[in-house]
Image 1 (cartoon, rainbow, N blue to C red):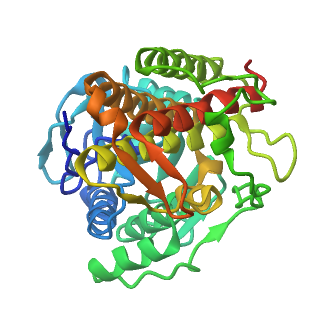
Image 2: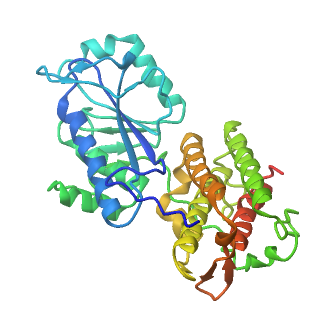
Length: 365
């Protein structure tokens, strides 16, 4: 059988992206919330138009999922309960004309503090700062339209400046990427890891001399089990929540979190290439540079929650495809740009060795 590739939706994506929560409370300033909301949605739309994945999954949250009235009376119904849905990468907290009530709500303040302590970046609008100030875990912005400037900075921080500038242009907003302040504590891009120039297709013929894994003779059922167990092991590594997950053992060696981000990309590419093999006659696979991908996706800024979601989604998608492949699909040919020949079966073997090997890289086997 020849499974059809899934189509990317207009602004959402089946692969989970950076989760942004917008916090609602009574009498919040609507522009403080609506401005960043529009920035993230516009960035998604432009990214998808350019053939990229939508980088943000945006949702609204309130205490106990209750509707809240903005200043002036407009009622907004949230999509999630911030007291139970803590799985966020960014929490945007709007300002208010009168801060007496929100500052006096200890439950709300404690929840914001707890969310930040879980590794979520807290972005606050309507504070007496410059356009924006980024200290790493906390990002603040001046009032009113400065929330847009802060959100555009967050787009740059999680993706790249080009997308942020195109988003500002689409919104007709005069954004100055240098208009804010990045404090010393804010994260900076790490150096590229040492490029791996080895041709790993030799794992199709014999066991790996480093990790000990041997995929050379595995059939589809055995490969599916290898995928299940390897994915479970990676999720277990992330679930350990060790403070060392984001620490590089050397300046040019990925951290465990960065390796997990790379593994999720390996699963995505395996799905895409297998789909091409099933759909086309002897397709040629596009080149992938892991360093370029790591820089574009900003692996160094991933959180354990984001890595878990990405791995789970990409791994499940690949497992589903493996479950519907037939004998004819395993014999169909494909080519790498360097001329290496694959069949459906050898491509699966080649692709699944990589995540197993990286468990060895991070000391998990």
